[in-house]
Length: 359
Ligand code: GLY
Image (cartoon, rainbow, N blue to C red; front, side):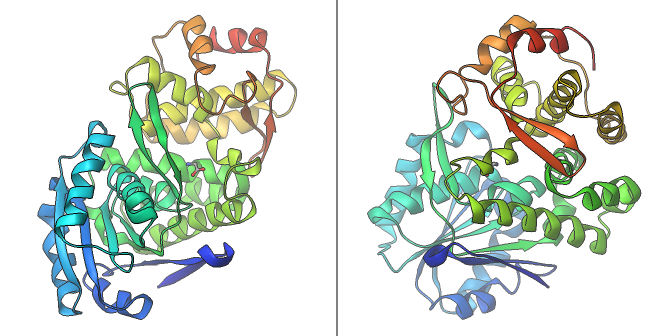
């Protein structure tokens, strides 16, 4: 088992990574927290495969657990669904000593964390992420939110879980395409902070895609470690945490313009990473090799490389992102594999130039 400590003074917690964690979740949790009223939040897909394993493990360890299952999908991440979950909290008589357990992908994690952060002004919650994306990104670092018609994740807060339990076995039931798009975030970590991780993915992509345990443990632990070190330095995204958004500036614009239903998050981010690198080349920050290495990996993953969108629409949409600071666009640009800079100086002229050329 790998264990990574997230040091955030009184909000510190551990991330555990191993196989077979779900069956042992109750036993492991009693070491962290005394048995108590517990609301287990999941979705109907995850419930079918893992609902009873987790429920039974908690019950065996005397947790008084009730399971609530949401319909799967991003459309569920609303204040309306949060209200249904608050009702469940009242029905099951949760108090400030109770526990919310989020079992699922990013949607379940984000909304469960949001409910935990607001019910009675905040009750403890833990994350059991079951998708690669949630394991390496959304379950760690305390960003919790619901969507608003005006934008994704617009209503939320920073609220850290008490622990994160990553069971790599859950990746065997994740659709292959979801695994691949999660891998884009792992590649992102390599580009922003760890050239050795990037090289490892280049060399071991086959093992990773075959879900080889050693390879999975390595890429997940490295990703969690990078995210942890960034969050420890800048929990509330005053500055440095923005580097985690490499590829997300143009990526989010692509998702917004296609109503979140043409490209999966990782697909849009992969395209965004390539455009960000093109910007970096254009301003003389990096070289073509940095672009070619990312392009090669993204091609090997079979991800789309074309967008049928007008550059003008993309540029306009960039300004609606919540990461726009005082009307200035913020880009994360690679200097080399393993190092990025934060730039507020990318001009519209450069944007039009790179968006008008194919990847
Ligand atoms: N996914 C970016 C962050 O957690 O800051």
